[in-house]
Length: 112
Image (cartoon, rainbow, N blue to C red):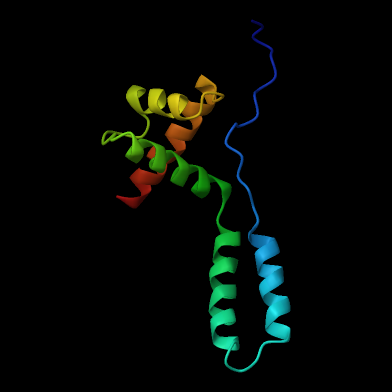
């Protein structure tokens, strides 16, 4: 293994369908009846909020979901948590798991 190897891309793919959903809701609002408008406006606001979330927030949620499903209650960046993440996503490299775990731990610290 070379110490000059290229870094691996992050394995957890963040899918962003929200911009398409936002565009669809805006089109629907153009022809909405008065009774449909309030619901569509609320749906549009929710979709816009989802579209604005950064990828790190979505990865943090993914990490927390995997750790919760495994019954892990310790720190998100513990050795056990990293093992859980790698079992949950077999294609995840050690570096990627550590990166995600550190991001989640930083988010936990910021919330506290």
